[in-house]
Length: 72
Image (tube, rainbow, N blue to C red):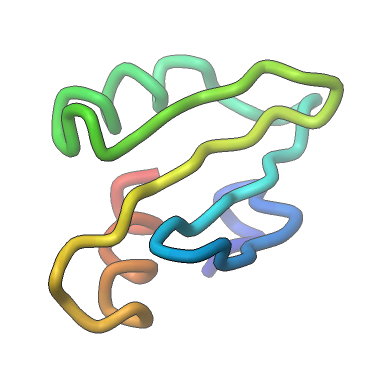
């Protein structure tokens, strides 16, 4: 599922999930879509390898990751 969304790597840091994205295939409109859905739970960095940081809610980690990827 993640590869279809051009996610190169997913890792957990504390209460956050970090999604590293493929710079050449990443659609910047998806950031707007994610921010409108998750508000301040999402942060975007356009570094050499762009990444999204998603703050986990009270749900289960795997379920939160799956829901997030569906929006991507």
